[in-house]
View 1: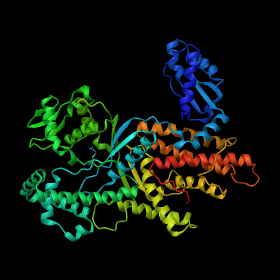
View 2: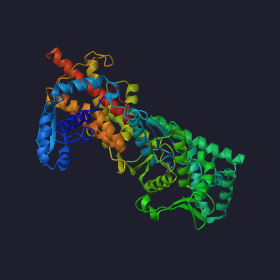
View 3: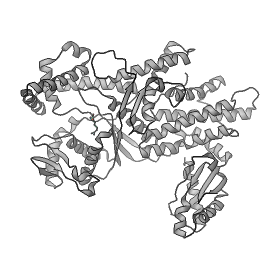
Amino acid sequence: MKLVSELLTEGIRAAAVQAGLVEPDAVAEPFVPTADPRHGDYQCNWAFRLAKIARKAPREVAAILVERLGDNPMIARVELAGPGFVNVFLSDPWLGENLRARSVAADLGVPQVGAGRTMVIDYSSPNIAKRMHVGHLRSTIIGDAITRMYRVLGWKVIADNHIGDWGTQFGKLIVAWERWRDDAAYAEDPVAELQRLYQAFGEAAQEQPDLIERARAETVKLQEGESKSRALWQEFCRVSLEEFDRVYERLGVSFDVVLGESYYRDRLQRLVDDLLERGIAVHDQGAVIVPFDASDGKGLSKNPLLIRKSDGAALYGTTDLATVLHRVETWAPERVLYETDVRQALHFRQVFAASRKLGVEVEFVHIGHGMLKLDGGVASTRAGTVLNLVDVLDTAVAHARTVVDQASAHLSESERAEIAEAVGVGAVKITDLSQNPSTDIHFDWERMLAIEGDTAPYLLYANARCHSIFRKAGLDIETFVPGLPDLTHDTARAVALLVVRTPEVVIAATEAAKPNVLATHVFALARAFASFYSACRVLDEDLSAEVRLGRLSLVYAVARSLSLCLDLLGLVPLRRM
Ligand code: ARG
């Protein structure tokens, strides 16, 4: 279905064409939702640009547009405001019908703007033999939400987990493994033990520099495919991936491909040679770099990309270049997105600029997330200083359980456990997703799990409430046939506007790669629904059948919109709480 903003924009373009202001193929400035309902539902400021072309005053142009927009069935009232804004109040019958049609359409009739288009997204991407840390948690949550949003818009998405599974750290780890491993500790918590061994190597190497030499020799053996080293490396990968998978399962996240850095290891030498041959890379004090100039991007001329160290080793960026080429060859994507710590922003700008030199024409996007701080600690069942993400999730769920036990005391033990899982994990996700990715976030369990406020329990309760209304009415929401919603009350109209805007918000959030844009919307919808529900009875005996159906139809549309948004944000839209 076409977006409301799109239909209005088509209307104003037709008006401008009729008035002889522009050619029929002109691109109009789009209508956008107004911030203040007193100024209408949607606003357009195209008149300012048109006025320049027509050499007229913006108000004069806006007046022409307002007059011609008047007989559009979508519009109840159109006003000229300020120096030349065109403000539109949608007609209630039209809004009601659009809402009804959306509520029965798949995914609220969100346009398939991505049909036939492909994108690759690189997120999560933790490192073997190390715990996934909170940075990877953010990448996983944000990357997954972006993946879901792209998919609902019809894009073909390749979610690729670019695991850090190759490099000189494995030589060190093998040396440490052979000298200091504690088999019992490894059996208990393999990744913690590997991480301890890696740290132990670092400390020991300060006193015994010959260890570095040994590690280097081990790395060479591994790179040459020596069977014992390879088997160890595979073992480290296996235990690490098992642990990562436990986190992914808990989060409801999955990938299409898991191609770690090791997948590209045999291409690196050739790639560097090729770059040298083509003059894209140059020798520099024994190393090989890709130099940039001002035309490659701001500040890059001082930051060449190092692709081969003086000892001949390839680097993180070399692998990233090989990865770009592989993705382009394999999937021919239009866009390639990366979600990592914001501190990798320069690295990606370098990789993107070097890829351009190689002739890669895809649209690159790097989404950088800020820090995550945990207030109030995490209950750990294991010893050790490294934070386990499963512990973070367990702590969230334990806190959620206290809330759920109070709020949902009427439900059975197993139901409450299931709800607490969705609420706890949902709270971790929504806390992350309700901020612009680049901002730092804090986990404050109490605030995250409050029943009121922009929290997971609030959102999930709003959705569950819609379903409980249907249960109380004795209606099956699956087979319910909505009629025209009753929009007579202001609160109902406000809800309807937010529901019909949902597809617009999904598109905007996806284009900006900001799930927080969608989170803000779904909170607004949940709040608007709460106001409606406290102002208007839905199931009262004395309501006429028509009003009752009209209100139930609105609740139905809210349920559809909430569950779509919750699903896109990776939350489980519970039906009972
Ligand atoms: N493994 C890296 C880290 O933990 C993230 C990798 C991101 N993806 C990439 N293609 N470089 O920081």
